[in-house]
Image 1 (cartoon, rainbow, N blue to C red):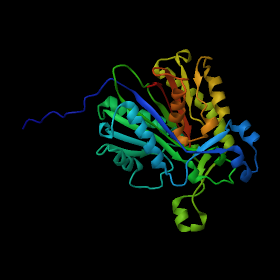
Image 2 (tube, rainbow, N blue to C red):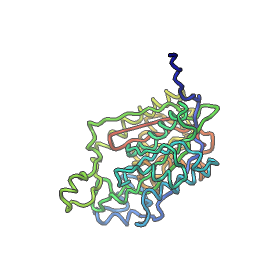
Image 3 (cartoon, helix red, strand yellow):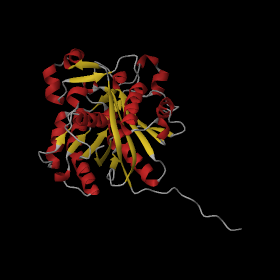
Length: 335
């Protein structure tokens, strides 16, 4: 019997961002609001982090509400509906159900069923991880349009007395639609991890430990600040430089730089190490939004576009890095 030839999906050559949208927590939390429990001050927080305020959501809003709001804006901006989406990728560390995935629930809310839907846990690198996966799905022919969301309600896992990380954190969601393009729109993703430093950013205890001892309460975040600062400040610039090299561009070609909004001093150090020229617009959304983990890159990108500091067609270098320790970077054309 003659065996039929296997049929595979027809690839497309290029992909691009069709839209980027954002949803921030509705409450503005000042440094004075968080300084008391950690015996700190507005001046100390500004000097050490560059944060003036952070945005947090109200108690009745959960992470999927933030994700849905950002996703609906991204779909509208792309001129699409949920029915046009073939895959939904949700990056978050603050969706508290092991199963079903938040992405599946979100896809249903958006009318994207039966789109493929899955969550990824790459913390602050999660959005860039999602863009890398969406690029591959579109170019392989496995999907026409992919919705990528980075969403966090980090206020749910904050210990207000913790001096290591809690005062940094905010709530929000950013979303992007990735689709086919006639010209290159997303450069190769440079990504990786260093699990030997996995404890540098961690939760206080596991869910198994909580089940055994309910007095422990909800796990909250902690970090070894110096370890994270040195790693991000001095090891991430070479990753961003490699992403530019893989994309075939030079620092002079870059018009916008959107690093993870972790700390203003880390951002300044990366700009210096990369040798970015003065014309490059650097995202500094951390000053007003705080560190929003997986949401920070799309939130910062959306702000630059909305304020007119970046424009459609600009070449942007973006890099996410954080707990894991994991990282991902790519050069993209802004929608």
